[in-house]
Length: 157
Image 1 (cartoon, helix red, strand yellow):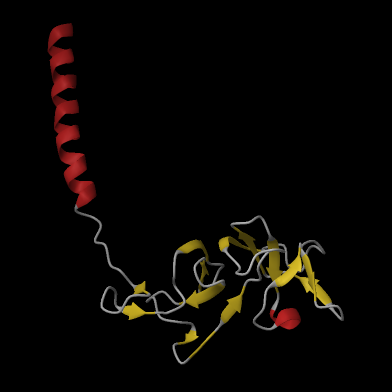
Image 2 (tube, rainbow, N blue to C red):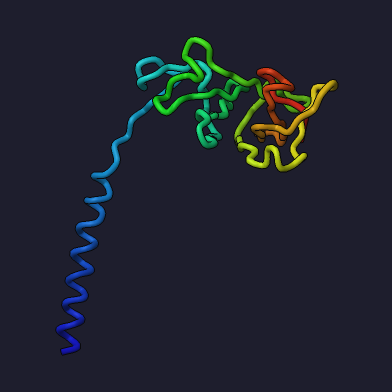
């Protein structure tokens, strides 16, 4: 009886191992939404060079750290520049002292807005909590708030 149960168990495991990889691979289709190279994806963006960090909060577009262009660019769910392809929001990430180009890698959204005074950025005249915070390849941490820097991240946090 024990041998029969063991054989049934083994047969079930072999069947599952055979079925599940096939089912899992059939559920996904890769679609390249955006590339800096024309013809590679549905959309072309000259900003998206060596994309690293990716973040999206609630109803916000996707923020991508464009490591090769010192930028963070916004894209909608279709991979199009956001808020509109003709007028996208592109934020410049500054270089670290001694560097010539910013090199954003990571990006996070500050979900403590309205509940905390942490992660403030300043332009010398005003300060406010960073809405998005960027980390760079050379160790710089900077924040961005639309009311402080416009399209420039700054103010090490």
